[in-house]
Image 1 (cartoon, one colour):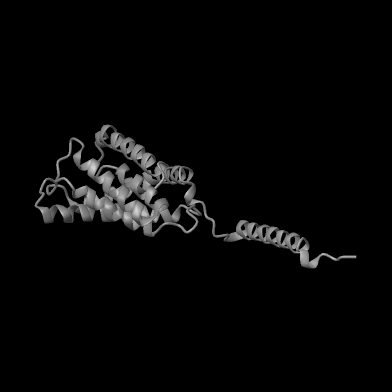
Image 2: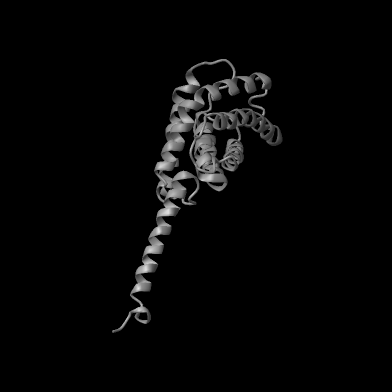
Length: 208
């Protein structure tokens, strides 16, 4: 794993957590709080794939569980982001590039609903009743609205940084017009090299 695959997610997660706690959590919006951590994990998962998204999601969730003013069981949010990071990796575009905003926005919308439901389900399993007084339906609707509105300002930028910092994400399969052109050029190069070797072969040199 390249060093940038460790440093870049770490920096993005820390920045997202600081903004989440110091800015977004203090906006006093009705219902849920915009989940910047979730958006960062989804953006990285859409580039790094299922395994990378799972690891990044677990690390981000665990950091959020430990950071004050956390009022829930440790590991609860880590499990949620781990699952959603893995799921986002499964939805990774084949070219690792955004062809439209529809796909990522759909991923964010599904993840916003799923994160709220999973968080509540895990809380019920571990007996965490800290958020029972909040209506679940209201949380789902407000989380969906806030995260979808915030996504265009976060997810594309996170994906661009992840691709730029990881040269391994460049597509080398030769697909598309550019790939066909590269394949043609490489084919000509191989043919020319073979012709030169053939002409230099001692068995084919005409002797007087």
